[in-house]
Length: 496
Image (cartoon, rainbow, N blue to C red; front, top):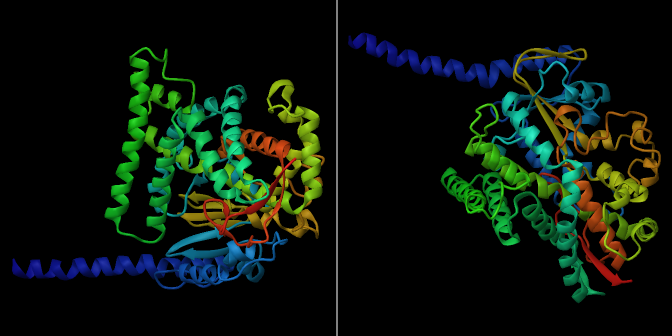
């Protein structure tokens, strides 16, 4: 009996050791050889960490430098590894995140095939496991039937007619911000911080019917959670904060249910939270969403919903502060449409804003809200001529396509909104590379919400103020969820 026990005691560690070396060495090397045989090159795999140490070192080194203020060539700073490896290995290359193979794809036709996903093999992936803690299994990550249910609810919440009813709330929040600005005329103001407050206020009120204070607490906790996870703090700290975030959402949910039960509301509300709570209370299991799904959707909306619009507003003000000719063109359009009155959606006026749309699109091109789009292939699949092994990750670095001189021209890094004068389709030689909100069935559901909020806020600012970049500004964009200005965007405002 002892000999059998001793045999098992030897066999189990040996089996685990073999399994470890298969996963951490033999399999990655085999995949690397197969991909190179197909012409897909890239940095060599390193035992255990893959290329993560190289990427981290390059990012740290890049953040030690600043860019010239007028430079929109930000790829070498925000994603130095992708900038380098596309030059060394070509438009498509293989890199390693630990023992996970990541095929970076920049060819327009391959991007289209992945994002349209007509055969359903390209699953959504967030890349980093810590993002599941921040966003849960929400709309941005879910798959299959669960995703379809969540997408249907989100589509309903952010349809055009719903957005029209949000306009007075958005205008009111912008008005509150501008009233504070009146005390800073002729002085410096950090618009990135101002827009952080504005977008959290707007999202809290329009999507969740909650106060700015409630929303701000949640935003701060989500930000702290992300910071903890990025800086490798202990799981216990992150877990405790995650519980606090869950309880914050539960309080908002309970308040909504109480309002309905007390008769204060006839139903749970027509905003996003109301639709989610109603789905949670459904008796039909086909339509019902669990409380965990409800909370995950709230986390996704709070985290991603604020981030995109905050970044867009910040960078539009940045480029207009530099290019004052376009600032004047945008201001003229605003006064032609609205005079000195608050902007509205009546007569479809926001859709008539051709100059503003061109400026927003050009800003999205140079400073995209999503720097990478990720997909996972659970089984062996052929992408174009490339045969991908199971569990391969596909990374689409949007900024590469957004700043490709072969597609946009030699002036690719110049802020030139008129390239979009005839629409997105005619702005470039390829139509599958402008991806501010992705493409295909998983295109961002809140893109119209972000566009509406941005146009309203920018219109009201242009009606009241001219602005220029402060001499204290330092151009150092960094990669976060979106592209953020590391040291804010200080501007000097002047009342018209």
